Amino acid sequence: MTGSPRITPAEITGIKGALIRRFAKKKLGQVPASVGVYWHNQKVMMAMSGVSAKVEKWDACDEQLKSFAHMAVAARVGCSWCLDYNYFEAFNKHLDIEKAREITRWRESDVFSPLEREVLAYAEAMSMTEPTVTDEMVASLVAQLGEAVVIELTAIVAFANFTTRGNIALGIESDGFAAACGLAPLAQPTAAERSA
Image (cartoon, rainbow, N blue to C red; front, side, top):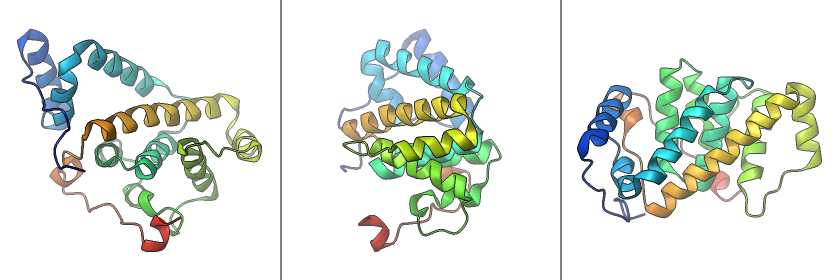
């Protein structure tokens, strides 16, 4: 990665820009570089923000499972922005931070429950090219969580792929949200885990 976005962030101007800057600073403490990148096409940015706001309101699936699934996608695809932001959000939502920091090496870590491992495997399987989801994966999750939860979980993972892949294509990297909160760095995968 280049260390800076592939499209230079635009100046966020006007009344709408002032509102967005104020909202970002209140929620995140800063205006992410990604906002400036997407500012070049405000219709796209607003539509993506609108979808994101709707996704945040879904409540059938446990918040921790959704957070872990999104982070698993980000780790698999390689989106440092999404990993950083979701780790920061896990902290702010009072989720299990020790588990959240281990997402990047979940196969080797002993902190996850069997169900959490299934959710992480499902998120990764959906994120492969070609997807490697099996009938058995879905049947097991439905048996444990129910159809409505699995539908929501699937949509969360699909949304995570939508956002992470766009960030990677545009060169959008971590803005340091977690570090700004004094969170311990995310655990790093071992060489064996990276080759899996």
